Image 1 (cartoon, rainbow, N blue to C red):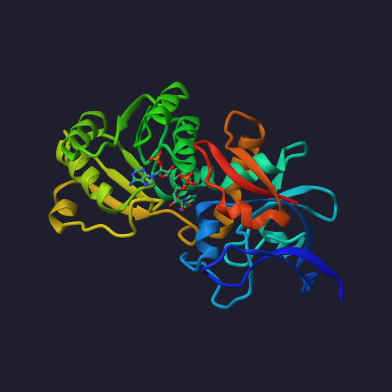
Image 2: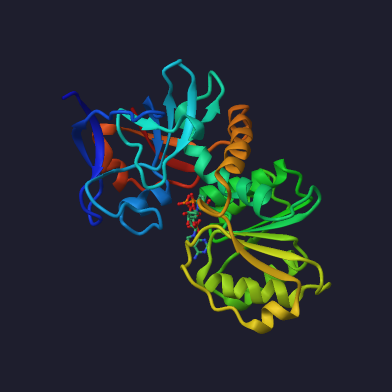
Length: 319
Ligand SMILES: NC(=O)c1ccc[n+]([C@@H]2O[C@H](COP(=O)([O-])OP(=O)(O)OC[C@H]3O[C@@H](n4cnc5c(N)ncnc54)[C@H](OP(=O)(O)O)[C@@H]3O)[C@@H](O)[C@H]2O)c1
C-alpha cells in the first residue's frame, strides 16, 4: 500500500499530528490532486477541535478545510472540503466543485486570503439585496475577514464603509486602506454605542464578525439611531468572535425594517457559491486584496496550530 504524509486529528483536545497515512483512492467520478497550500483559518481550527458544525463525527480524520491544489492537467484550483479534510500530500476531490485558479497565482497567498474574503463576498453577493452605493458597517473589522470585508465591500461598489473594531492601530490602517469611517469598540459601552449611532445610523447592511453581547449593544445603538425606520437594514451574522448567541426582542424586529440572517457554508447553494468564488479568486489573483501567509511545512503542523497570527497574517501549511 502506498503511503503519504498528512496531518491527522486524533483527538479534539490536541492539535493535528504529522502522520503517514494510506494514499487516497479516487472513487469513480472523483479526481486525485496534489495539495499545494492549506489555510489554518478559525474554522479550520474549530473543525479540528470538534467545535464547528462541520466537525467530523468520528476520529481519526484528516485536518484542513480548504486548499489550493494542482490537478492532473497541471492547472491550479481552490477547493473547500469543510469537514472532509485537505491536509495531506494528495487528496481526492469532486471535479465539479473546483474553483479554477489563474496560472501564476501564489497558492499560499490565495489560500490565506480566500476564506477571509469569501465571507463578505458571499454575504454581499448572495444573501442580501446589496447594490452599488449602499452603505455597510463591518462589525469586527480588525481581523482578517473583517479587514477583507472593508475591501470587498468597496470593490463591490459600496458607497460608504464603516469599520468598527477594537484594535486601534489596525483601525487606522483600515482608514488608510479605504474605510470611510472607523468606530473604536471600547470597554465603555456608552461611548461605543454613541460612536456606532453617529457613524452607522442609516447603513443598509451590517456584516457582523463578532455576535454575542457586543452585537446586542451594536444593534441597540444602530437601530435606536435610525432616521428612517422603514429603510431596510440587513444584519448578516458571519462570525462569532464575541459569542455564539444573542437575545433579540420582538419589539426590535417589529419597530424597524430590520432583518437578521446568516451567511456561511450551508446557507448558499453550492453552484451559486462556485460561480461567485470563481470571480473572487480571479479578483484576489489580480492583486490588491491579500492576507499575508505565515508558512509552515506539513511536518510542523503542531507548531502551525500553536502559532498566533499577527493582524493581517494567516497561518498556511505549504506542502
Ligand atoms: N461565515 C463565513 O463564511 C466565514 C468565513 C470566514 C470567517 N468566518 C468567521 O469570521 C470570524 C473572524 O474570522 P477571521 O478570519 O477574521 O479571524 P481572525 O483573523 O483571527 O480575526 C478575528 C478577530 O476578531 C476580533 N475580535 C475578537 N473578539 C472580538 C470582540 N469581542 N469584539 C470585536 N472584535 C473581536 C479580534 O480582533 P482585535 O483583537 O483586533 O479586536 C480578532 O483579530 C470567525 O468567527 C470566523 O469563523 C466566517
